[in-house]
Length: 75
Image (cartoon, rainbow, N blue to C red; front, side, top):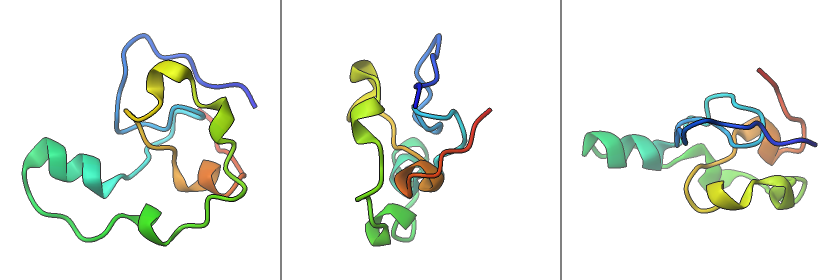
């Protein structure tokens, strides 16, 4: 799986496929408004291709639910 190349980092987009990652923690950070628990808290990441996340994006942008399941989208 090839990672999506970004000119600038967007923490709301998956670094693997470029789709919206819908990260509640990022929304809370951006808005200062509390959010319900993020989808990722109940997700099984065993099939996620985490090694494919570009080094510069690790720890800075969440992957999306499809990539976490091992079935990437794409844009």
